[in-house]
Length: 105
Image (cartoon, rainbow, N blue to C red; front, side, top):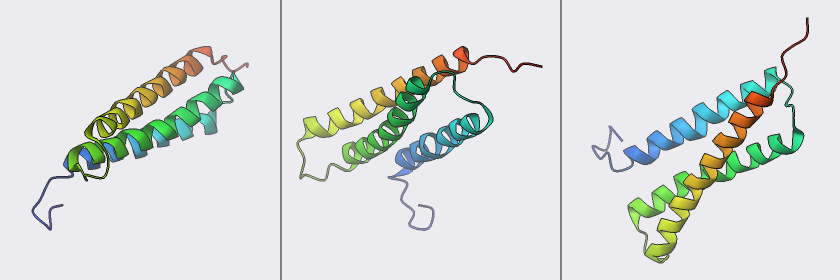
């Protein structure tokens, strides 16, 4: 972006960085350190995180660039649905973290 002088993709780049890298990385560390208390909730979390990350950033790119091959309402719906699914993944993670049993001594 800096080389071209255009910061048109700055919001998309920031969301890919924060959602796609930082949150998914921190969740991966959590799963490496802790055994999830509920396997079904853990699967829901992982699948919704991946789908939501791709949906949010892909929908944001479509919404910002308006490529023309999709209706505007569909671009907006992909953007909103991706964000909503990602929000669900954060909720699933919070539930997983609060259901975690303390380590026994």
